[in-house]
Length: 122
Image 1 (cartoon, rainbow, N blue to C red):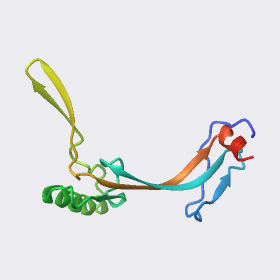
Image 2: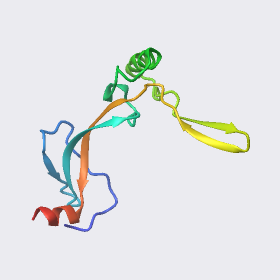
Image 3: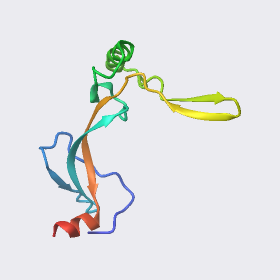
């Protein structure tokens, strides 16, 4: 692989599933990947999250539904509560909060393949 220069690789906008791409400028290799993870929201776009309706409160589901509409209207940060600091006497606790509840996070996009991963494939 060529020594990479400081630039941003121009990746295709709409790749095929399991597509690989090599940047002609620096030789960096990328692979299209998708994943789904269960847990607290770890995505910014509410359309990439699906709340677990058996575990979430009606208020969390309503906040998520509203977040999708606000996202579509162009609002940037629609996640709401993320973390809260609670003082309990002399102790301080950091509590994870989520306005969308818990559920499935979907992600897809380009991931750069490292030289070690390329060597494992070969």
